[in-house]
Length: 77
Image (tube, one colour):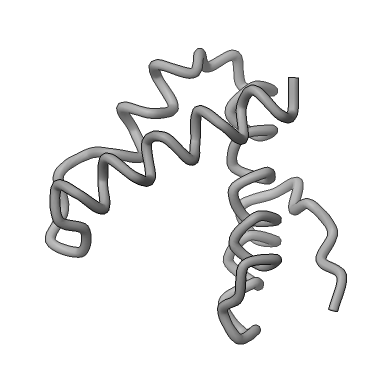
């Protein structure tokens, strides 16, 4: 299934109704990066926001996610 890059928070939240797979994650990440750029955020600001401490991700997973956000930012520029 081809996912379009979400352009709103509502579209990103609507992705929750689909089974998680690599394509879905890539679309969601691309949407987050594009929305951050449109709102004037830097990569550093977006990364800090995404990597805020939470009870879901452990430090290794947070590190991996940070690298994925940076890679998506670079690819989409």
